[in-house]
Image (cartoon, rainbow, N blue to C red; front, side, top):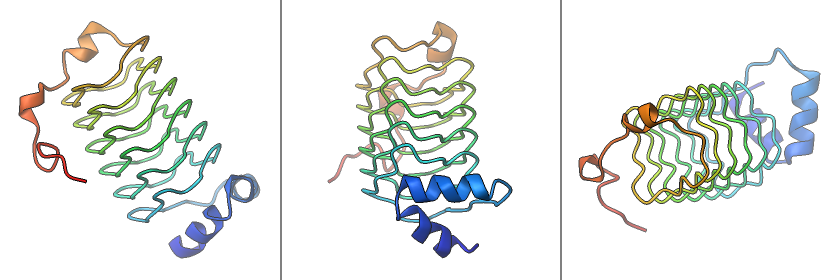
Length: 169
């Protein structure tokens, strides 16, 4: 199935998508650099999906399964990702500014250089997650399960590289 066909199926909603995924468990899903902004993907099975460079800003990914997915450089700004499963996902360099990750599971996730500025990470699980270079200025970490060692790898706000060192709408 081509990227375009997969994208069209996903836009039909989580039920249609999840049924197809269940019927085609060995099908590789590649949605890299696609535009899923403002989509309703709540509860979608996006397990092991390539979403490298995808635009997912403003999308509803609540309770979605993004485990072991590749979201390198993805745009997740202002996305609703609460209670999503991001176990083992790679969000390296992703922009998740102002996203809602309340109660998300980041166990073993790779979050290198991820922009979580002003993100809601309350009650999120970061067990064994790699937060090296993550940007956490203004992030809500209330009740998050995170170790001091992991936080020690996060960057200071003044170290922000472009485009995150300037905020534009």
